[in-house]
Amino acid sequence: MHPFYHYNLEDFLTDDDFRGWVKNGQPRNDFFWTKLRSEYPEKALLMDQAAELILTWEKQPSDLTHEELDHEVNRILNDSAVRTMASRKANIVRLRWWYAAAAVLVLVGLGWLVSGDKVFPKSQYTYKRYVAVSPVPLKEIVNKGTKPMKVSLPDGSEIRLMPDAAVSYAPVFVQHHKREVFLSGEAFFEVQKDKANPFFVYANDLVTRVVGTSFTIKSSSERVEVIVRTGKVAVMHAKDLDGNKPGIEMLLTPNQQVVFTPEQPLLARSITENPVAIARPVVKPDFTFDNQPVGEAFKLLQETYGIPILYDSTRLENCYLRVALRDEPFFDKLGIICSTIEASYQVTDGQVVITGQGCE
Image 1 (cartoon, rainbow, N blue to C red):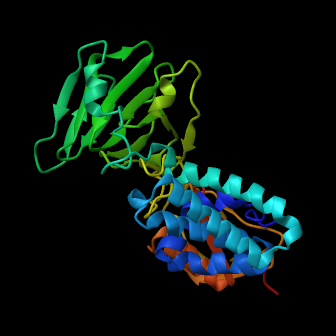
Image 2: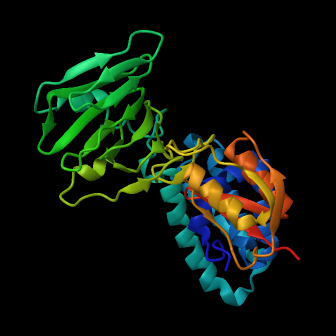
């Protein structure tokens, strides 16, 4: 069954690709969502509601009061419901309104709205705060130049610190079975493996935990972005570390990323804009296919880039490829393969989902 068949309103509201399609009309996703709508017409109402709610939030949210936003949510859901539902389903509509309103509150952070010019409060998780409350003296390194700076940590890990970025860490690097680094700005990390002493990077509202891998973190007052090159990393909200119970971590694998902004506090996996081949000592993969099953192409793509690719193997078992691919980017390769077998793809939760009717 199609993985999006069970989508509810909140799922559409929090799907990065659906929101991007609604707001920006991304052509790469237009065919997919249009096809999903035609295949599952019962989802059309939810898609309409979600689209209108997303666009409503885009219309100067700082100018909307609580009452105005509630009224707009009510209008959207009731208007679209009237067009498609009988009056005997009024109770269901009301339930959907409350459910959707809760989803919108999560999506736009309505609880953070305050009077005045500021829509969101200033985060207490900043580089300056981390450094100020550290129980031990920290060593700080600031890149004041115009080129990346190499920083070697006491455990052998290395940081490529970008211009205007800064890192701080304890000279006695291992403290309470942790290796901790505090970051302001952008840096690329290559971490030495040490299972007994996990490596933590604190960058504003996000905390990244690793054992040994390579990844990039870009942090500013507006957003924090974590991009994985090799290995696996776990990302969590900094606020979750303040409680007695451990917070929920999101696991990222190669070519996956997560972005945090105050406007969108929910963490969602996605695929990096330009996935790169995973570094490993093997011969360069050959993407020349001469009447080979399409499953072999998807398998090679997945192994090369480390990105999960999901598809119905039974439906596509009769699809074969005759195509020679060279140095095209990942998404170009994927698009060519899908076009050849008249299929489409959708990126969601850091995975690629292939849909197609199959081949004769």
